[in-house]
Image 1: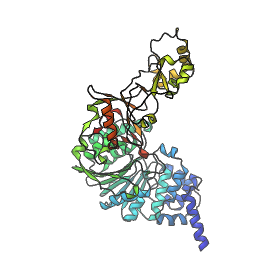
Image 2: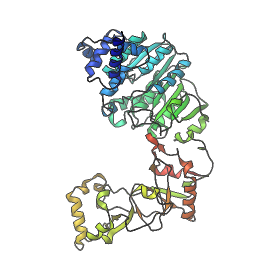
Image 3: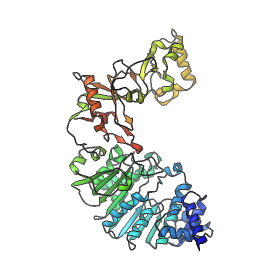
Image 4: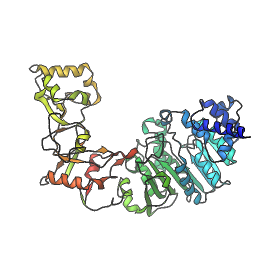
Length: 525
């Protein structure tokens, strides 16, 4: 018996540690666990997978599933590379996020759970374990994923229907009070079909909202849910946090305030790593359909292990409706009163050359090539601003940028002529930005009095630019209004810089980006 248990444990480790080498073995195991006869009729694509299945000893896998594991889902993730799964947004939710989401949903006492974009069925499995009698509808477009979900739910003895279908257009049978729960696929708008975008426009119109053509698939899942949800239904989705701030996210923000009944937003600190195999933020959105909320609870969670939905600060809906960017509201002091930078200065991007490696060089190289007359010292790295101590200077080691006048007499200047000929020979003039300039080498350089970093894993840093350095698009330039002393403004900005954290667009790992208008919105206490 000991040898038997050891073999079972070794087999399970093989599934969990990437030892499964083919999707066919996954299909074989799913069929052996009962997938073919569970969860309603199979789709044509599922039937093809079942037709090629061979016998498989699944006893150890069944025991692991009953004990709370998802060995088939783990193997699926290991078999398909992150790149392949990124194309369809297939990133399975870790247990430390599944558990609190399902706990919140089940606390609302639903008769049914719809697992939207179910993958291996992790939300449906957790809901079944919490309430074995709950009715399950699990939906995914991937036939191998739905076979795995069928197998997992069959082992648990769930009351379930599994659909291999597109969640946006699937026919979901009517049911009692429903909890809509899941991890909507993160697929950018570039990869959506024209039919999906047309569906989104029609769906938004039916609901009295508008949707941007830049909206990704996860935003469309909110639309599909709003179309289906009955008053009193509840929902809980984990998604990228981008929609809090970007233009395409306006449809989600609008739905939560008008129709979908936003209840709480739990944002996992972007410096955490909620998904081990995806560079993404994580935001859990909870809602009660049909309600018109007066407030939403906003909670910034430092560690996914501490996730408990519904805590945090209460923010009035009128405050949310009055701003296009919600992420700053998660931070203490985000509603601070003070002077906005935009009332004191204008912020603009540095120049985008389209070919930094061509237009910039060392001072020595510019001298050697006879280009020194047109070479201007340039800020070419954000690290230079971060290390400047508040003032950035020219110096022997500083790189230069070749800024040829658009009307330069090239016949009289052989060095400039040779420089441009080298650019044309290597196709620089045909690069996108260069090809849209007249002439293609015209840069339009500016020398801002103040420079500022705009993307880093720390708060922005500001520096005076007394030597008139040109600026590449690795930092922003700040032009104070008349009467505003640049030195005083830099001092105020750097003194308050730590309060700016969270006011930009925050990405995985704590990388935060400030567009020019977002930087102008910074509040100086």
